[in-house]
Amino acid sequence: MSLCNSTSENRKWSSLFGSSFPMFPVEAFERTILKFVAIAESIDLPFHLTGGSISSVYGEPRLTQDIDIVVSPEVARNRVDDFVHRLASSDFLFTEGVVRQSVENGDLFQLLDKSESLKLDIYPRELIPGELQRSQRLELFEGVFLPVVSRTDAAISKLIWIDKGSQRSRRDLRSIFRGCNPPQQTEIRNAADKLLLSELLDEVLAESDEIR
Image 1 (cartoon, rainbow, N blue to C red):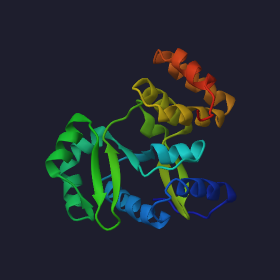
Image 2: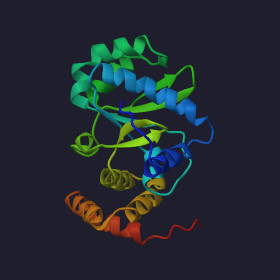
Image 3: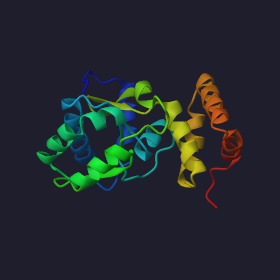
Image 4: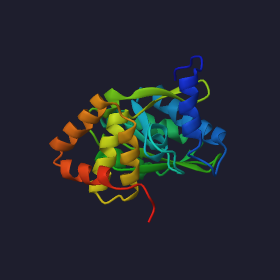
């Protein structure tokens, strides 16, 4: 965990991140996330935050109770015994068999912080190859900088989820795309072309944000 002085730009990120979680004090989310960070760092497990909360940072703020974390599938498999051991002595409730099988298969598993009653969704796989190497560090809490999915990868992941049927991701994608600079927008379009999703991208971007 990297700590440094706040700036007005970094305070903007933390403000946007915190506004995503109206049902709980932002301090509760900070405590829960940092418990996982401590475990990940203790076994050198690369990770970053993603999902709806990061969409609010990069695009239009929206309410969510999801905390999504991507971890390195290779390191998770190699260090699964250490990972389970650290979890066993933490505040997280989990099922060991589910964690082990999910890590092996690259499937989602969940951790419940029994102290805060908050849930983490852990993805031991990269939706976009190399996304963990492109992570950005943002100040999500005051003085606390954490790795998050890059802006372009956040947009591309939304496009993939839209292709899988997610309607909520459509508005997220438009909002994130508008916040990208021209080179980033070009990168997103190139990625969509490689995924054969260019037509879907154009369709989503042409839609109105108005609720009907």
